[in-house]
Image: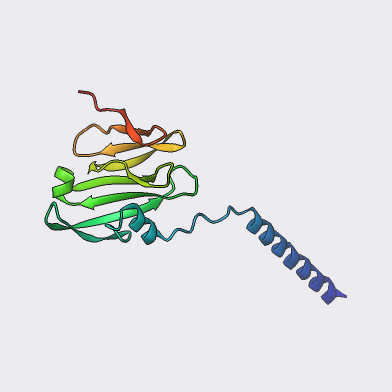
Length: 160
């Protein structure tokens, strides 16, 4: 009888563990989008960039340009956006980095948003579903860009 009580208690404990694990699994959020990052980056940049890191030859600069690219979902709609940073003084001026953000328009075409020397910070504030972006550079001012429904536009410029 003593053995049966312990066996029964072990069975109840095992059932409780399985029930908790099952409840935790069903309460867990679904996994995020499983994008093929390289394919998204290639599509967004018209084939110029082919992965999250690499180099390409830029005809206007007549040099190989290093880059990084990051696939994100800025507005939480399940569709990707792509940040790119091109590492070159030719394209990035004094800070050495040219920033772009590729966002799909209403027709599904990729639209480049910036294309100028800057770094960026994603701010917690949002407008029309997209976060505000703070542009960083060599100066003391960091202007803020805001989504206007079609593209990012300057929202808070630097004081003159």
